[in-house]
Picture 1 (cartoon, rainbow, N blue to C red):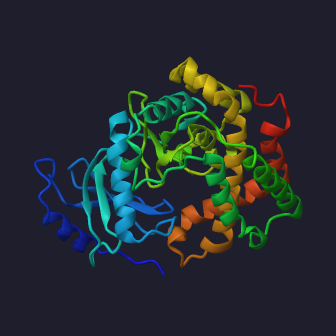
Picture 2 (picture 1 turned 45 degrees about the vertical axis):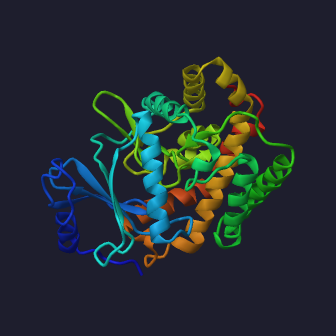
Length: 345
């Protein structure tokens, strides 16, 4: 059963901190409780937000998860496209899993397809950040072999497929994709350079500022790995329908334009290295997402689970997952890679 937080106790915790002149108020207002893993509370008029973990999808304990996210926010900050980290609150009775304090991003949810260009710009800015030396990459995960690393995630999540109550034709199609992924993972890894990647880059994790800049606000799963996974996750239909506040959809032509804009942004050498891998990683990313959906549907959809604490969001997720499990939608998505001419980037 997930815990209920006492805003008064949290406010007292904040009042005990010395956060400097930008801490102008400690009245708390809920910004969002729709996230799977976090709630977000505005801190008075300070321009700061409490990012409150309710669970960790990777099974980390509270202290390790906080350290991971702090490192991710600090490292992504140089891109100028993510919220600035300000403070980390260790777990205590008021905040059993602790919290991060980050700068508030004032913006709206993306509208598709028109905001895809801004999202491509932001992903390019994050992906172009210089990498630290190998010894300095922890605590962030390092996927030096991103194909096999992604397959490991897929295989773990795929254990829930039998319990996900999906149509038999859909299950058969996913099993076909699993066989492809296992074969593909044995054929070698890409030789393009790793990047800092967001991993969970669905459009709902971006906010569009008044000037049109997209800010990526959820760095819970950031790691060093393959940029094409971020590009796929931003544009697959499993992602574009995830957030109820995002409006619109992206056609195949819109997706091609998104990829092309990103490739133009990163330069010829980088684009040439990435281009052959865009569709294979799109295929792997869809499989990673659809097996995650199976896990949510089978194991996390109970109202008592921390991942399903917001009833309205849970109902939206459940409907979206059922829609994505429909055989005709799986078939349409697979056309991106099974039809040789469908996604010509």
